[in-house]
Image (cartoon, rainbow over all chains, first blue to last red; front, side, top):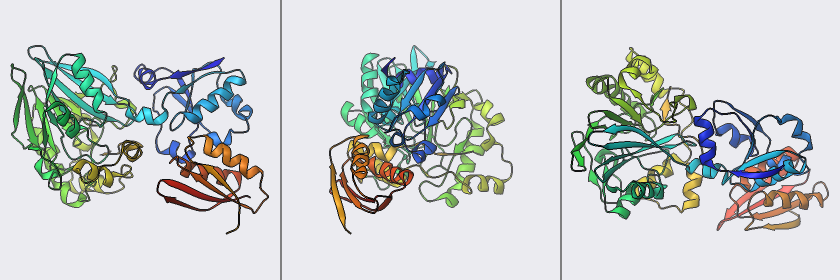
Amino acid sequence: MGIREMTSKEVTQKVINQEELFILDVRNEDDFRDWKIEGENFDYLNIPYFDLLDGVEGIVNQIPLDKEILVVCAKEGSSVMVAEMLSEVGLTVAYLKGGMKAWSEYLEPIKVGEIKDGGEIYQFVRIGKGCLSYMVVSNGEAALIDATRMTDVYTEFAEQIGTTIKHVFDTHLHADHISGGREIAEKTNATYWLPPKDATEVTFEYQPLEGGTDVTIGNTTINIHGIYSPGHTIGSTSFVVDEKFLLSGDILFIDSIGRPDLAGMAGDWVADLRESLYTRYRQLSEELVVLPAHFMLIEELNEDGSVSAKLGTLFAENHGLNVEDENEFKKLVTENLPPQPNAYQEIRETNMGKISPDVDKQREMEIGPNRCAVR
Amino acid sequence: MNIAKVLDAKGLACPMPIVKTKKAINELEAGEVLEIHATDKGAKNDLAAWAKSGGHELLKDSEEDGVLKFWIKKG
């Protein structure tokens, strides 16, 4: 009996280890349907907390006694209330610390590879929202790619491993989450790079990131080579790191491809997207390990919780790379698209520097899954 | 609109705005209107869903200077 707090980190471990968990989600039904904690072996019951104010006796028989139970709500308060009520009728339960708000913000750093002369590349898995960002480290210097607004996570991680952030990149102007790139660059005196074609309306200084741009970190020449790959946005740029890793941004994912409509230009950008995926990427080595900026489904996680696959494997298996007919491809990426990410216009304006919402507002804008892909 | 009671739930975090609303509604007669003031942004969707599931009617809502106002007619 009694209740305990479970952190997003603990829940993440259960997702990665494919453990069982019974989630009693007490948010309202619309919010649950829209977005929830995903795990291969998780079971769910969704009963809004406001239907439980008179007691939990009515739902006790729907809760298994042989599984760990986690009560989840938006911010924590309601889950504590319901967990206490369940405890009073004799169940042992946990509640999610910080609720879905904390779940959306949690980043799990995972080492995804080694680069020459002792260098390393880390993937920061934003498990709740499906966003992936990267830190490339070599000889005491680091580059960040597609950092989220949880900037402390990166600066503290860099400090822990004894490295200095020198370069910060965004592969494109994001529409699903607020970039932390500019803030980190300001804090650490690093250079902030953005593709100029995505930055025509930005209100701040940046270094233009173009196809063919080469950036070196550490004194052993880790090469970060930009490849112009438009389609999700007109400026979208991918990176080849150390001739081993392809950071594909929002152009190519593991089981899906980028959607071209979030800047309102779907029709115009279809041909660019096709050219990037079917011509430019085809010229690259199939041995490159693809590291995308998102995952959509929990099934895309590798055994260690990271998200990656060889480019050759994706050419063989990713549906979006295997549509021969151009019209069919156009249909795939412009028709029957999933809903757009929450507040995506405001998020784009924030990333341009046009508006500066406070942290609470930023959280609210980012609620929900990323929805940057089409399958 | 004839308002039978005004509930101040400003500054309260979820689940308290709904807990208090439920209590206040219980003290009203069917057809009477409760006006609620809250600052928790989550209250908006939750009050609408709660009113629906409880057979009450959310007549109107507004937002002014960060204060959310709701008018619920008891069912």
